[in-house]
Structure formats: structure tokens, C-alpha cells
Length: 267
Image 1 (tube, rainbow, N blue to C red):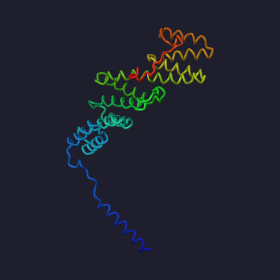
Image 2: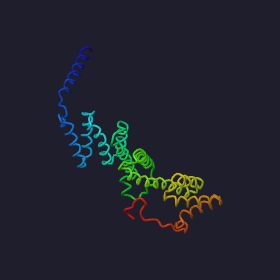
Image 3: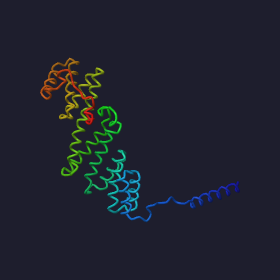
């Protein structure tokens, strides 16, 4: 038994020693300056080699963690993830940058990029290429995009990214309102009139300026009518006529675009 143990110990020792003899993977960046690594990362980023760019940026941050290049690398890692359609990683990278550098002169861009990453996740390539209405999806990404843009607009009203953020917030407001109207429409089709009325009311109160509220008011009128709540029905119809006097819904012949409202290139 002692002999067996000795042989096993000898074999383990040989294996461990052999591991130490294995050649290490070549690191092409060994001996490179921070500027050279950054330049290589930037070149790959510009050439859309996002995965390789991220690797260079990560090496730069690890090797020169206290220099100005490290902070820039953190921000550009987020951008590379965003361009590579890796929304989750992009958002995580922007949040890390914001947490580490809340007073950085480019932190407004981090908020903007966080919003863009969530915004594009909500749209998604499948949405661009399909006819699925965005309002049928989980609104979580849209809500988070809106909040990121709101943080930017509130904290940095003079930022050069603020005008575009405001435009995207207006878009997202209608997207979120449309989601609620879509759910209300779903309840109406299943004769769940109380649920439909509640959802339509929520959309009207939460997103009062959204164009989607035109249909939301119609759903409210029809839900109250189905419930026999004539006073509330008449009130809702009066509000609809006041706010949307030329609405095709009032004529019973809504004309909808052949393309979803968000696919503006198909209008």
C-alpha cells in the first residue's frame, strides 16, 4: 500500500512539473504602451471588429488601471458592446462607468449610451425585420431606456445628447402607452370589460399626451357601454370628441396604416 501511495505521489509531482513546462499563450500586447494598446483597440472598433476591440480595451484597463486610458477604455467597451448588439453587456458597462466616475466629463454620454442600449434592445433586429408590433412585447426595456434618458435630461440639460434623448423619450412614451392600450384591447376581445377599462384608464392617466390614447378612449367608451355604465360611457365619449374631433374611431371606420406605427420606413 505504501508503494502504491509513493507511485501516485510521484505521478502527481511529474504532472505538476509538466504543467509548468507547457508554453504560455503568447500575448502580443506584452511590452506595448498604453497608447499602442488603445490605438489597436480603436482601430478594431472602427473596423467593426468589436470582440477584438473589447479584448484590447480590457487589457488596457487591467494593465494601466489608473491612467486616463483606463477610464476611456471602460466607456468604449460599453460602446463596443452596444455596436455589437450586446445590450445587456452594454448596459452593465455603462452602469459600471457611472458608478466609478459619477463626475467624469463624459458621464452624460454614459447615460445616453445606456438609454440607447435599452432602446435598441426594445426594438431588436427581429422587430426591424418582422411585422410584430412593439406594443406586444415586454415593456421593461422601453421603461429602462426612458429612465436612462430621463436621468440624462434631468442631470445634464445642456448636454449635446439631451435633444435626441428628449425625442426618444417622446417615442417611448407612446410605445409604453400603446402597450397598455394593446393589453386593454386584449381584455376587450375576451369580454373582460372591467380589466379593459382599468388598463385604458391607466394609459390615459400615466401617458396623457400619447397619441395611442385615441384608441384608449375608444376602448374605455366600449368597456363602459358593455358594463352598462352609461354615465361613465358618455363622459368618456365626450372627452374623446373634445380631444379627437376628427377621429376615424368615432365614425366606426378606423384607418390603420398597413405598417405598424413604429415602422416609419413603411408608411
